[in-house]
Amino acid sequence: MRAIRSRRVVADGGVGPAAVLVRGERIAAVVPHGAVPEGVPVEDFGEAVVMAGLVDCHVHVNEPGRTEWEGFETATRAAAAGGVTTLVDMPLNCVPVTTSVAALEAKREAAAGKLHVDVGFWGGVVPGNEEELEPLARAGALGCKAFLVHSGIDDFPNVTEADLRRAMPRLAAAGLPLLAHAELDLAGDGAGYDARDHRAWLESRPRAWEDAAIDLLVRLCRETGCAVHVVHLSSATALPILRAARDEELPITVESCPHYLCLTAEEVPEGDTTFKCAPPIREAENREALWRGLLDGVIDFVVTDHSPCTPGLKHLDDGDFREAWGGVASLSLGLSAVWTEARERGARVERLAYWLAEGPARFAGIADRKGRIAPGLDADLVVWDPEARFRVEPGRLPFRHRISPYVGRELWGEVRATYLRGERVDGAPRGRQLLHRSETSTR
Image: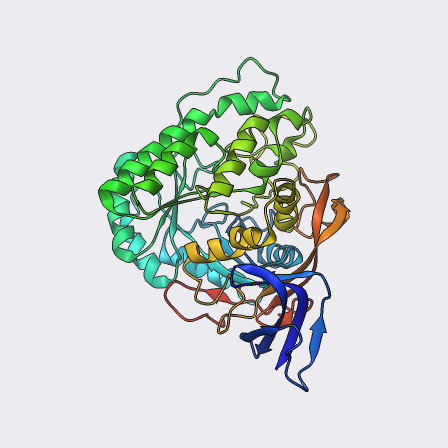
């Protein structure tokens, strides 16, 4: 047994002096700071925060098939650098897309031996694959994602309302949630702006697209009983719809992302396509309303939606927002980015722990082993200094392509150490694959 100790340990919903006792891969106990049993080795981190390892359940790893965009080795190494000990991989941008059991098996084979953190997998819902959804659940998918608008790649087509009516009862029967990219194409504008102006992209994907999609998802959730999760919420005008659904006790959850909570449309430089994502980064007043939604509990948790690509696909040379790949790379920066804004709004560290660890773990169905510092759970921990400030430079970005809108920004909260199942992540890959309703695989 060994102990990891600090004056600021996040456990039982609070922060205070404590020691986390680790036996093997799991947390044995949380004891008072000075009550470590005699003879137990202690790592004392002073005033640094010790909290549960982050769970990022929205990551595009892109392997197999588009490993030049990212890949399991680089993505999981970047995750660990940011305090993430578990990630869940999205079903698209890989080849084949994860819409069948065979494709899930191909992805699991591609991940074998490359994981620096634990990894789970989402399946996908596309037109005509409703018969694959229950087999995907049995094969270990934690849930299934659909797009209500073009996904950006032709091999993962978007679904219609009719497709969802066929798929959602099957997901409900399998005990899986539907994850939805909630935009409906209502014909945006943006034609009056130069393609190097972010406003061209912003006006082409208005809030009304999200609001209409979320309204549809609420109705289908009510009719089918299928749990619905709204990914990467960017439209604050959808919050009343979601609040009403919550009041109705419908099984609807919602996430947002650091780029919607930290960045604003007004600050996007001309031609800086590192900021392009879908839905777009919106105005400052929208950001503030999203923060109110998060603090009020309408938004359940925060994940990165790390969606990298090659520099060429990002159109860094010509700054064309219309043609550039839409996605923000930020996998190692989520904790720092969110904390930078949270501290200014008076949010406490224990709220951050819920938003970045416990909340996503509960949603992904792995809260029996991840997301909290509690006896019996995996000894997944992140040690970080909330008073440390640093500038984001390309050289400190550990994902494959060092491209991010956070480059040059100063952030608060620096990760000092990450522990996966009791061992510091600093060597050979030892991550495992997490499967739906099964024990952790050692594959």
